[in-house]
Structures are given as structure tokens and as C-alpha cells.
Image (cartoon, rainbow over all chains, first blue to last red; front, side, top):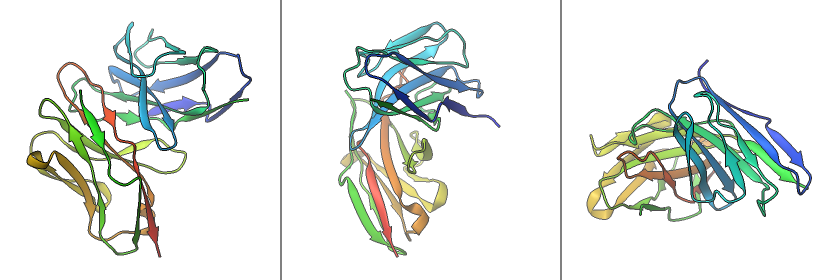
Length: 113
Length: 114
């Protein structure tokens, strides 16, 4: 089945530790995205990539980093510089063209203790 | 810059009643518009999209939405609510061009009462 996988589903980390969230897609999509979701806030864009080896900051990139070395993979690192990292993180992908919908993974819930 | 406003963070209806979820957008160019649904602790699933073809768009699960340029609106409706429709709904806009970014509204939580 084609789709987007995110792992793990739940992740717990101690304050001050960096943590990397995985996102893999087998839809052959060029573009990939990371969103953060907090209650009542909707989805906020962290980073996006429209092609391999290139990515752009979204609206709330501070304290996060990404890489796009392969078309299928777009991992997100939550660094210790992110002041409030506890949230639900969603990865998405799409074909080229703004009229194309984004397909979403199941999400990773990160809790920083 | 584009933006989306969803009126009503929480809408409650009875089973069998009309569902109406409101979305207004702001865009400097003709937009592409999307409605997504999210069940608890899951990702988002596309319900329908408007891409400048027909102004009345039909989606999955009996939902539809009408693009009204004069009102800058894209409200989501369903004639008869089912218990399974209880979820959070998000409206999103894209301004197109070489930028594929979506801007999402803050969501509307739909509760369906038996």
C-alpha cells in the first residue's frame, strides 16, 4: 500500500535532549512537509521541501532542523532550543502543483518531561 | 498573505440534522481550497478540494462545499449527520504558483448527539 509512515507513534524525551522524528513516503511525491499541532491552534508549518537536497523554513522553524537527502525521507529533529516541544507532529507529502492535496501520515505525539 | 478563518471552534448537531461548518479565506489571488477531517490521534484525510472548476464540490462521506468568491467563503455541508462524522474539520487555502504551502484554519470540532 502506498502511504506515509511516521515513527514512533508516541515518543517521550527528557528536557534538553534532541530527538528525531521519522517520516517516510512511498507515493513518489516531490514535496514533503512537517506540521506541529497544538489544541485550538490548527496546523502550523515547521519546514517544507519541494525537492531533494532543498528545504525552506515555515512559520515556526526555530528550534527545529530537517534534512532531505532522499526523496522518500524527510526526518525532523526537535532540538533542545525548542522551548515548548511537547505537541503532535504531522508529516505530509504532495505532488508538484499547489492544486494537489497533501497526504498526511498518522502523526507522532512527542512528550518532553 | 493568505489566511483562513473557521467560525466556531465547536459545533454540535443531532444525528440526522444538517451539518454546516463555516470557512472564510483571504487571498490575493484565486485560491485553491481544501477541507480535511481528523479523527482523534490520527492524521488528516482529504474530504474535498476546489481547484477552479465547478464551484459546488462533492467529497467523500456525503460532504460537499460551495465556493463563493463574492463572500470569500467555502462552507462545508452535509444534509444528514451520522455519529461517525464526529471529528475535527480543517479548512485550508493555497495561493498557488510555485509555492505549495497550505495555510490551515484552527479547526472546528463537530459533535454529533444521538
